[in-house]
Length: 107
Picture (cartoon, rainbow, N blue to C red):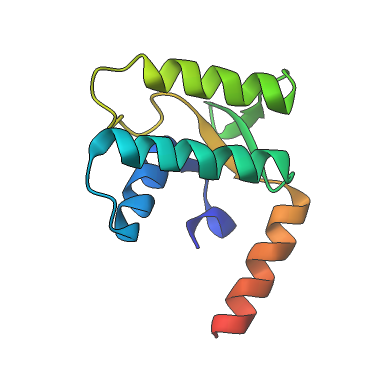
């Protein structure tokens, strides 16, 4: 549960969805984009940039941020982006509550 104690980037998300058994790089990216969109719309993660030692949330709406991530990522010739290349995610307060509950449940 990396999001609990550190920021997460798109490269980690595409790596994570690879565990689902999806093999094609473009399919992994699309699955990662769907997961990211769902978490943003649920208010569990906050997209932004790292500036110095801080996460700076983007000032656009959730829909605009999903569009930005999708557009930038889809324009890349290689779906396996580098850490921090497109976006950094921080957990929202609600996301931290969910993450903590999951950690307690799995022990």
